[in-house]
Each structure stands twice: as C-alpha cells, then as structure tokens.
Image 1 (cartoon, helix red, strand yellow):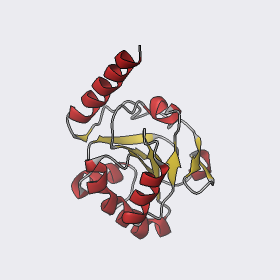
Image 2 (cartoon, helix red, strand yellow):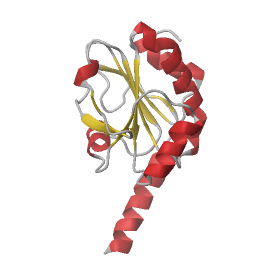
Image 3 (cartoon, helix red, strand yellow):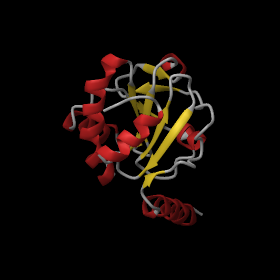
Length: 169
C-alpha cells in the first residue's frame, strides 16, 4: 500500500506544479470568507487569521524545496517591509515541508520577518484548497478572499492581487 500512496502523492504534486501560473479570478475561495486558522510559528508562537481581522492579508503557501517559492520570497519580504506600517499583514504557511532546519534556513536566507506558520497535517492547506506551491490568497480587511494566485508571483501579479484588497505596492 505505501508505494500506491506515494504514487498518488507524487501525481497530485505534479499536477499542482504543472498547472498554469497566474492570477485566478475564479480561485477556490474568491468571494468567500477566508477560513480561520490558528497555527504555530517556526519559533513557537501562534498566529490566527482572526487576530488579523481589520487588516488586509497576503497569505502565501510555500516550501523550502520549491524553486518558484525561492524566486518570490524577496518580493514578499520587500512587500512586508514596506507595507506593514500601513496595516498589511504578510503571512507564510509552510506546505508539506517536514524538515524544520530547511524551513528555518529558507527564512534566514531570504531574511523573512513576517510569520512563517507550520501546517503539520496540511489541514489549513486542505481547507484553502492548496494542491501545490506557491499559492497566494489576497484577503481584504473584512476577511473576504478577493484574489488568488498560483505559481511564483511576479511584481505585476502581486500588484494585481494587492489592488483587489486596496493595497498599492
């Protein structure tokens, strides 16, 4: 049975990684309330989406082994540094990355100051319909998902998502 399970997981990951990139107006949750979650940070703290209500949120699912995640990390870091004073919250959720040392190395390498949250059983990823990384959700101040992007963000695609939640970058 384990080889069958491994084959299914590899196939699902392959489909997620090979599907088209870009902002998806019809993403799985666009126009709906963002599902709440409370997850542990890599440093042992806790962050809930409910605690960020009243602020626009960029919720990014990533993994240390993901090349497009590495490409977009500096962009998200810069966004967090420049917009956090204006109320924007950038939050990363680690997707299917069991090696905490690699996760910490990724955060250190890209100097990510925004929270990186652990989703050990993938419950949050499943709730959000994440099937591959990176995937990013743009959540407005009222807690509604207004934009969705799959694949590595470019500055233009990031701005398109931010515009939907009233943020300029």
